[in-house]
Image (cartoon, rainbow, N blue to C red):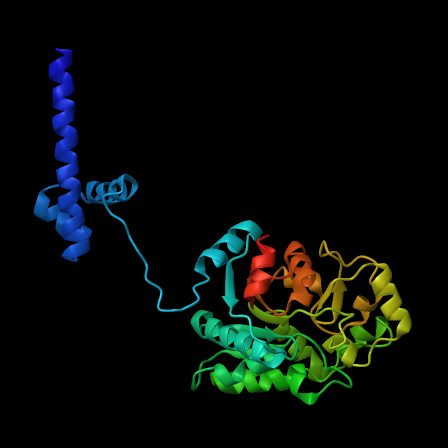
Amino acid sequence: MKLISRGLQMLKHVGNEKLMVKVCNLYYMDDMKQEEIAKKLGISRPTVSRLLKDAKEAGIVKIEIISPYSNDFSELERALEEKYGLRHVIIVNDQNDNLSQKRELGREAAYYLERILKPKDIVGLSMGTTLKEIPQFVSSRKDSKITFVPILGGVGQANMEIHPNQIVMEIANAFGGKYMLLHAPAVVSDPSIIKSFQEELGIKSVMELMRKVNVAVVGLGTPFDTNSTMMATGYYNKNDVELMRKLEAVGDICMQTFNKDGETKGFASNQKVFGYHLENLRKIDTVIGVVGGTSKLEAIKGAIKGEYINVLITNYSNGLALDGRQ
């Protein structure tokens, strides 16, 4: 009796494998839909789905993806997404010079925005030399019904080309969208001034729009870097810098500094910033950090720990270092 039972099981197993191969041929080679296969073979659609799944697990079906790119970073991107809990990670090639690196990052940021943005989206933009590279890579669009707004006031003595308002105008025009500008300083002398500024008629409507932002694009800086955009604004004095060093600042977003754990406690200058406060970035559905250069590595880690970004676009060397491979 046991021998008969075992023989029947073996026959059933062989029969299942034959059916599995037939289902796979119809699905992968003949491009038939699962419903069509079920009807043709007289089995249920869930059975077809299960057989296809089992075939992959048994090694009967092997799927190979041939990337058209010489440098395919998809495995590294997936590893970083899983390790840091990020929604998306996009890795670009390392470049030999700073400007080329920023343009490469700007290109990928433009492509990513083109993929994800939808009509009625409200996009908040910070400042920086990398973000200003985005518009030139956006495919020409007309009437996209997307609205763009700065999430930071004006940047003092820094070049006009990296001013949030300028970046907003150029990206909005590239997307064929609408925009509103924020005519206020990025940093005020006293935090108490901010509230009165927010009630000004020309500013109040912009602040209301900022609260509706559902996608944000931000640059990440390192306050002690010689090329720091934050320091180039002229808003910070020696005392500010000394306090930042004492509190071990590793990075800044929207001119607000944080430590290696993403914490902002004690950074008094953050309270003087007119714009989106870091803790409010966590409320935005999609926050894209666009950053390159190994000097920004600790800033990236701090921004991730602080949950200020959930999408990261960075260069290959940073990707390797974040994954512990370098």
